[in-house]
Length: 140
Ligand code: CMP
Image (tube, rainbow, N blue to C red; front, side, top):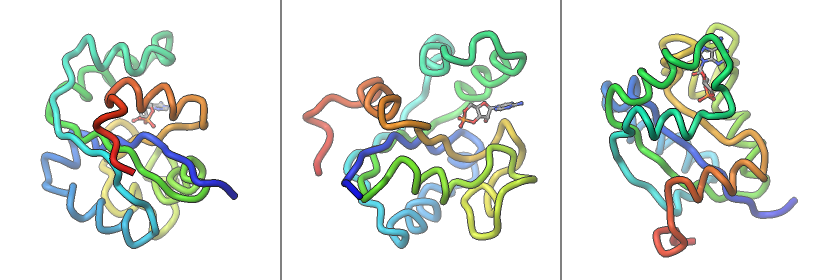
């Protein structure tokens, strides 16, 4: 197993309910190191660029409107096998299908307002990290 970095976003539904600290506590208890973090508003254009891979999907417009409706917290998480382990602790995309103990089971409101995003592969993690952070902002 090797040390990896993955990109996390705490989404507007979670920042609106002041859940950043609760989510971070869960992440740190699970062994993730939060090695970069910033709270920001995504413009509609930035949300569309981040989620460009989904642009043909029926939910794309609603997703981009939601992701630019309030602040997000972008983070770089570091841990052994971080990409897969973060997807495990996030839980299924639809909180109705998320396992007990996962972030989405505990906090998510719907498939869209599902509280967190995590990269789905090591290659995408590198791309998504560079979307938000310069090397100087990542303190491993
Ligand atoms: P995320 O992991 O950020 O990746 C794309 C997002 O699209 C996903 O989480 C969901 O919040 C959102 N989304 C909305 N509707 C759907 C859907 N029907 N299937 C998958 N993702 C959806």
